[in-house]
Length: 333
Ligand SMILES: NC(=O)c1ccc[n+]([C@@H]2O[C@H](COP(=O)([O-])OP(=O)(O)OC[C@H]3O[C@@H](n4cnc5c(N)ncnc54)[C@H](OP(=O)(O)O)[C@@H]3O)[C@@H](O)[C@H]2O)c1
Image (cartoon, rainbow, N blue to C red; front, side):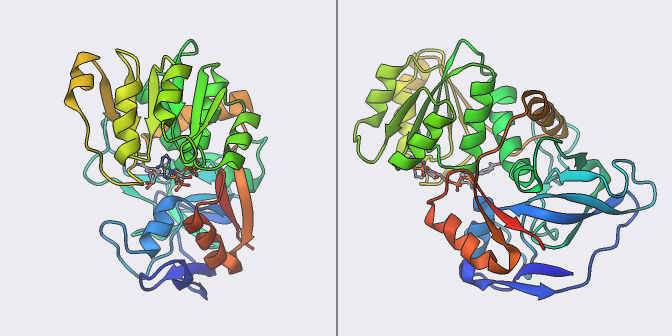
């Protein structure tokens, strides 16, 4: 099969398309013929050497959509030929509150979806939403799962609340907006790009603030509040400012630290009785619930662009430049 491999860190240019052996399913596993895959920041961080426990060579890619190609002994799930997507959270564990010690993410160390075939436990294979193309379905798994858990399982956002979504250009954050609008919550989004803010408004964002041109963007957001919930992955100064501007009793959820660590003031945390929550990916229950919401609302993931697998390095460089709004997709020929 053709697959994208990374042999050494050094950036997206090191991603090469090669011919390798196709996987054979072991008992309890399924092989999926991947038609489309999606990039996550993780894939680019791995090429750059900015990710823990990098094991090379590796086939990257956590998100994939396609059809079931082969089924191992005793593997229950969609039949051969069924259109499916893959839950990239492997071995979450028994506790829905937190992943266990054996949890890993598909796409390094386990061979990922940037390949014509991927082999995963059958329990990670789910019917693809019928209203979505392979490209749109591939946008869903990792980012949709992370956003679902952040918005609903952790923050428990309600429709009468206002949520601040920082850095709306991020793949996960576009899903946070999608889910928040789906239940009718009021949304405030920030971005460093006016163009991305316009696209967010077209998706229903109620208030849009440019954090580059508005030095006091957090005060502008506070005036547009009161802010009940924040979902952030920028970290650093952005996270610290969010603590200052939320209303008493607010919940702040973090799933990333793109700009680094934060130094925060303690006073607003205890004086306002804030709840600060971490989250990462999601449990099998979160994935199933996320799919239910996407199917019920016929929700459409934001897809920025689609590249052929042979152009994988260009796709990864686009993610590295951070100009995308929503997901960058690889079409697997
Ligand atoms: N824990 C998990 O399970 C998990 C899952 C997925 C991702 N992550 C992490 O979450 C982060 C985002 O990943 P992603 O793939 O969703 O997004 P992404 O596509 O990598 O985009 C990152 C976004 O961060 C925003 N940003 C950068 N600097 C900012 C600042 N100073 N203030 C506010 N926003 C800023 C930008 O938004 P604008 O372009 O709009 O300015 C950018 O689009 C990464 O650090 C990733 O590793 C964690």
